[in-house]
Length: 442
Image 1: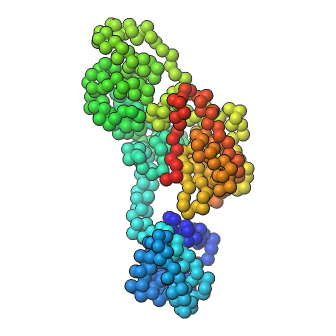
Image 2 (image 1 turned 180 degrees about the vertical axis):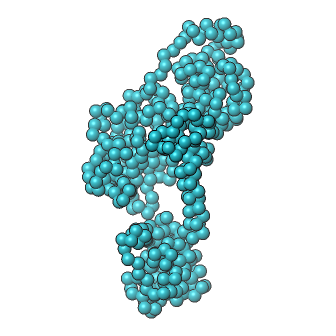
Image 3 (image 1 turned 135 degrees about the vertical axis):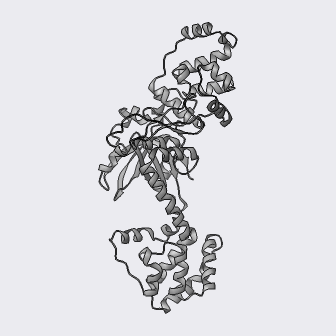
């Protein structure tokens, strides 16, 4: 959390956990407070205890320190404690380096303190979530999708991650989807790479993702399923012309009308000739006289992102991978083969921009391609040089260097290019509306 980060506690703690750095305690009293966190104050309570055992604070003074930590950014309330803390530690035999380091750590907690009870409950939630993802991944992804909006990831990212973990996702359908996402029986054999997801259900995308379709209409559809044809759907689910067109654009009428173009035509025809449409022979004749070509793969993809926020077809980068403008770009998955400091070119859809207050103006980007996500670090100097490109582009090409520590990999940006124009080649777009809307500076 930000407190331990700003107090420079995270990396020392991790190095000690890995056995890369020795653990020292000034005395047994300090050991009693910090031993379970390897000599690093991680929790608010430890900071308060440390002030008492290392600097001689009374319980009342320690409580005042706790309140000052919570407000020091607003009122500068920690200053009055600095000399008392440092002098108290020096008087009890601690060296000045230790005393000053402890005070800096306390200042870090003033930015964001993390009580141990909060950490414990959070850890329990994390463990439970990890267990579900490992042993019941289909239910895990279904639950996450039904809980949106929340957290860090878009529906598209969650469904793609589900696919990478062997979970089959199926498109929204007026005959099979409820308002919420749901699980369906799945008779397909497990993928060889994912034998442990055998017997997992398939994930049916819910009508809640269809843009422009309200929950009330989606609930009426769910209650009246199944439907024989479009007029049966429109009548028994009491849908308006606009709601039918919305479902057609989203591809949710495939079981009744086929591909998007045909479904849109059929939905429009119901409004054009409502009386004639009630006569089966006329309806079938009308359809035979207007059999439309199916949309291209790229047109389907653009419509998926525009009207459902995700696509179960190929990723945009998969369709653009061989384009000359992206020559030499590596995939997110290929970054694992790169050494620390090695030059690399990557490209991807911008799904997230972050600029934490504790990062001194540094921006962190998440770029998504057909293999996963790549994390990009943009230093302030690069941000100033490419500000409009970084903040407005949908598809970025980044030239930079790989930074890795263990399994954690980032690309440090050195040069940035906007390649959003390539997305227009996939299919028709609605004015300048973005295909993928990134989550920015949350």
